[in-house]
Image (cartoon, rainbow, N blue to C red):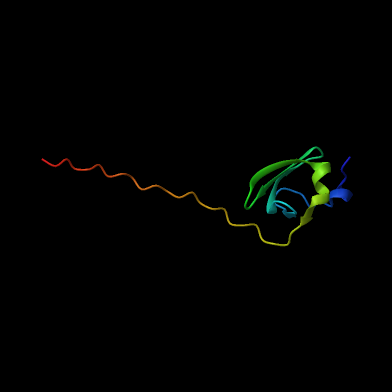
Length: 82
């Protein structure tokens, strides 16, 4: 059973963490059973909480700015040559 003392409230959604293999990430959700983290370079990963807590450490960095999706320019129809 995970208690607040064990997790130290370090893993609330929005918390910045560092994992030995996946690097820096942001906690998306945390429960006794599962933790979901969005890593900067590896995307979203789901872990069994009790198995990953020893691999995580709190990071003091600021959350990264969300990247906006690139917008595609509208295609201009070609004018048919006569």
